[in-house]
Length: 293
Image (cartoon, rainbow, N blue to C red; front, side, top):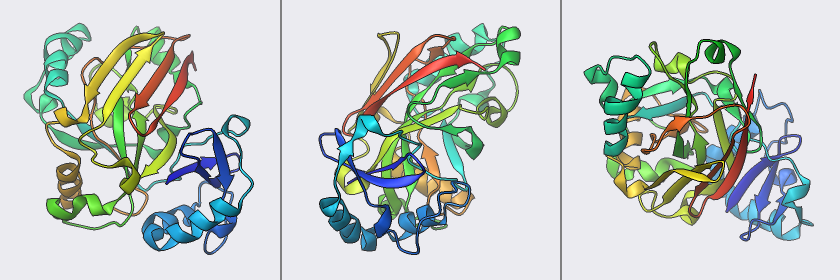
């Protein structure tokens, strides 16, 4: 099933061909609050999806679908408690950071900076699949590079603490495309990656059983029709199940939490006027413009 949030933060089911959407908001238990800052209905959906799935499927069958091009897709998550991001999860990206990106941006390649770990991004940095990335004026004036990072992104369904790796994927509601936009330079990762619009997510959430094996997906990102990133998730140093287990040992995972699984190689600068096209096999694609704030 493909779940989308659209227009006035309503819930829709996207058709298998990605052409139409059916409004299933009326099937939500406990009603629908259009205020995205509350989003209690979204948390309940994440936590109870296996039980709610038949109800949503029936509502989608009974609804009159409309063209996807006639609605505004929002980010397919609502007010998550945490956005957890991964650093240094592809060997080729570690090499390009050590040998090219960090030296070019005047950052000393400290050992810890090139080791796998997790960190937090501000949930307020999330934007929708068609919304522009806004490059901060201060960064542009200082000549700082702002980079794209296209990543497989996970949404947690059933939360938990100290989750075993063998059962970790059962805690996943679904997967989507995420862009971890990054201001390069010295200083804390969380700060440089948490500007408004620096976490575009979309185009919809593909539930875990439809997405299949998260280690067999292909990621591609183009800027102005030039391929920048192209990789298989099989190349991750730390696979999704291990990421979830590791993160849950550090902090309790809650329904609706978002996990970005790390940047593939090929990161590079974006400038005002660029158009980013991001795609992951089986999860769809999204086109994101770049503008100056």
